[in-house]
Length: 502
Ligand SMILES: Cc1cc2nc3c(=O)[nH]c(=O)nc-3n(C[C@H](O)[C@H](O)[C@H](O)COP(=O)(O)OP(=O)(O)OC[C@H]3O[C@@H](n4cnc5c(N)ncnc54)[C@H](O)[C@@H]3O)c2cc1C
Image 1 (cartoon, rainbow, N blue to C red):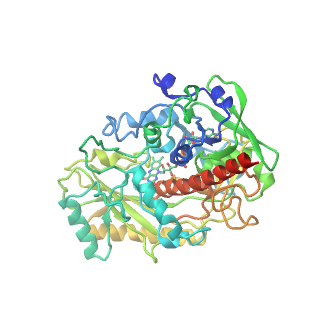
Image 2: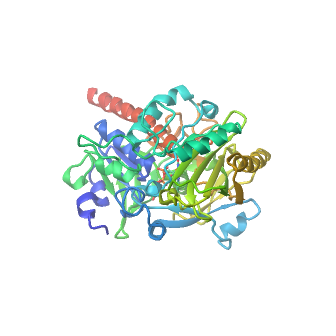
Image 3: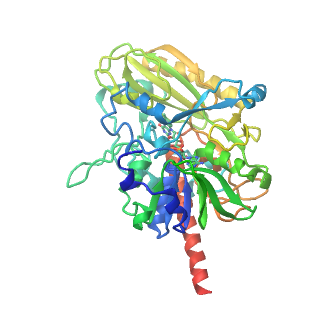
């Protein structure tokens, strides 16, 4: 148990006895954004988080930023393995004779403790399959960028990019000369000025955002917003129309029910979908667990002709109407192949390095056959796999991404040292499973993420997305969570007023 637990964390039993308005399952950015918005609107909210409290901020905001030896060990305290597979391999995965091939995290703050900070917005066209358009999202993007401390965004937040220097300008110039328009990366690192009593927020992490919130405290002390850690939600208790409680296992190993008026799934796309399936919701709606996907992901290492003489760079090449993918260039390094788990390795750059890491994320169209299959009863966090096949459209985009990798290297005057197409699921930008829509026949949740068939249940994370743009998911998850929490609060306030009037 973390030494701060007696000050910061609530007992799950106390949550069960407190008659909270809203229970939020998961403390990543989707859960914490939702919980803070609801608490600020006067509702009593508790977050149930399966993982332990380990850090109170992002690994890159504190002393570990440059400790490439220590950070992986922190990952390993809370990381577990999962599987993406094909139809052909499915039986072996279900029999648990196949190797796992993917990563997931369970910790207070979720993946926000480790993420890489790249925060582009979706393009307007990316909302084509959504139940609302880019105009509806714009104000939520602005609010999300402000609360996360995004710098260098295309929006109107007016915060200078984190990474700017003459050497980076030189590389941007080289790319522009080859008709590859690139920019400073939008990053979720607060660059607003530090003065007059204001400190930088560093990297955004939901755990630090939660701890900064004035409503947050222990439920035992009457706090409006609280969190019980090491408390895993095992099942939703429902009758097909209403959820009355969730069954949890707390850190002592005891199992009991926690009631609330409303329940929000925010376990990350995979775990929210698994929990819905483990609770029998696929029997209520057969679309539960369908239309799941992830970005197409190509990675490379380039060797520049000269060292940049700058420790770090971070460049973003946006997608275009003809190019359904974007690229991120991070450096400088000595020659090394980085795994996606080294998301913040660019903070520990090397001015004499000549090597750049190249990540390219492409859109994979959501297909109904992209689905979750439970292994066993689905009650444990590892009891699932994702079935995913590359479509002809995916193969075409992947081929274009391979060519683009070579074009960018040539544009920089660099050599491609190594390049690789990463496996499905490895981008860690998953979506779908509880897709939203305007009509209950073709979607699981309504445009606000509320289940069509279960009135007091909603989902805040990317499980509700019908599709995705090439942009990394964190900013859009946060903006959508903010939008939906605001609408949920308005609905719950109206419900309370109607009850009071009776
Ligand atoms: C190494 C790395 C680098 C990344 N880099 C970027 C980047 O540069 N840009 C970007 O946009 N995105 C990036 N991402 C992805 C981004 O971090 C995620 O998309 C986002 O943080 C997901 O937020 P979430 O709230 O949906 O879920 P998570 O962050 O996964 O949080 C869910 C939480 O819910 C808890 N939970 C789940 N089920 C239960 C249950 N049954 N009971 C109780 N608790 C439960 C989990 O333990 C977990 O802590 C990166 C991810 C990783 C891992």
